[in-house]
Image 1 (spheres, rainbow, N blue to C red):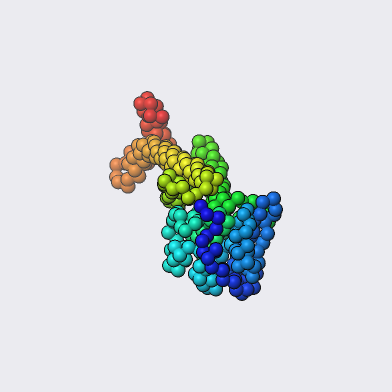
Image 2 (cartoon, rainbow, N blue to C red; image 1 turned 45 degrees about the vertical axis):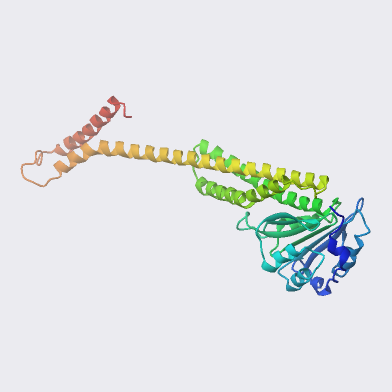
Length: 352
């Protein structure tokens, strides 16, 4: 792989408009830009210095530049669509707002379209949005339409001692940050399932059905969003191509393996939640059966007692004991005796 995208050596990058950085916060067109050098802290690049920085990396063998853009800003999108040092395939994706996943080599770099976690995940932690990346040995360009967690976390890590050997290495570190988010979600679900399992086995049935359903939906969405991407990365890495540097290929393979392990854990949690739902359903059915059994016993015991009261409650002539002084107590004794005989019959048949 050559050292730089061929367009950088053929055409001078268009100067970055200052208006892309005139407003503060992550809503500006150029969200952030950093220059990484060996044995040095990352250096932030202002918008007006982006074009000179892109030209300077031709003579700096170990420098890596990361530029992160907000595509919802029309000025940033226009600048990127006119950036001739970027591959036409990437600009075509931006022009069509194509967020379908993609892993391929274009020109002198790696083109990636991946899912990243949405920054606002209060309602659904598995909510994702597309992240467009182009990585070359000395350059990483990322762009998004909506705020994303992994890209923002990488931006925050740039404030500390952070290093990358190439743009592709930096892209794999961005993917590793996203994988770490998947693992954190898996750890949170593991703790929840441990607590749910203890309560179910202890017979403390509360609201576990809703929690188990929520965990299963989260696992299913994570698998649906990231499993195809892992398959794409595997196919790409096993494709016979020698254009990737061995170190970059190894970093990308490590990133793919980490994602695979995280997805395997998600799959195990899905199956565990499914088994706990079956156990919960069995416990609930057992409790319901026990309650129905007790109700049936009570009904059977009260049936002869109700029959006696019904007979003596008939208002017809010739009713025995109608004028006897102790008839009420004889009837009460008969009612109790009928209930006792019914209970004795249940004990004799070992139904109690």
